[in-house]
Image (tube, rainbow, N blue to C red; front, side):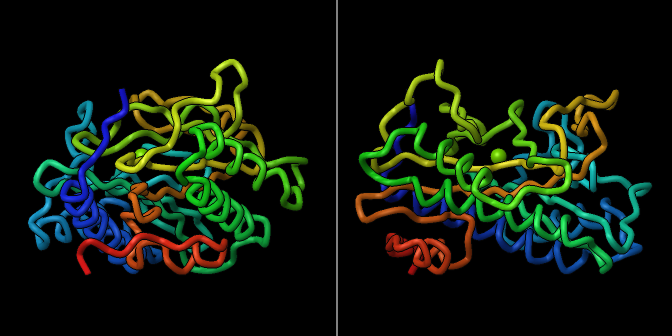
Length: 278
Ligand code: MG
């Protein structure tokens, strides 16, 4: 069963989504060479407190941070740490979440720390972000879940290839339904797997987190002995982008984007729903 939200509940999720956007803004600004990922976690905690929001990452399955900080060959679920000091040239993904009155927001960005990134690393982040927008653009009435997965995968495969021969599309993790909990049905693959079928129809009231994870090499990953940190098997670097999106009677609304997705989806010819918060 996929949870369908009322317009009032979507308005709460929009509030939570804007807190997540504020967490990203503040953390991206603080992500300078010499800062530790624990410093960023403190920045995130302050934004949550300032907005009267609750963390959803902290304590989730025992997770010890307010955000996940994943550097270079860490794909997702990196734990903020005083020992993890950012250096110029690092590629950092920041996954953040917030809860307002029981309604959840969840999004991730990739940040180029300092300078000196290779063109390939810059392009990795760009392709990952754009593949997320391709997936978000497929969140429309009449589509099925598989149309989102196909949009992400086909966007990636249409891009010029990295020197390894192909981007790795991570298969072991993916997007998810979101609402009264952070992780809900359905699971959202970032590639098409025929035996899974086409998935449910996308209908107003549905809210999803769409989150491609790409690597410059293998799609294969492993979890470190801390039980959280996910790294690529071949040490290749990885990027992660994510937004939470609601489908409403008036169209899609990207809950965790400050403008509701208006600019980026507008470029793709899609009119977003009006912001319930005005
Ligand atoms: Mg997520």
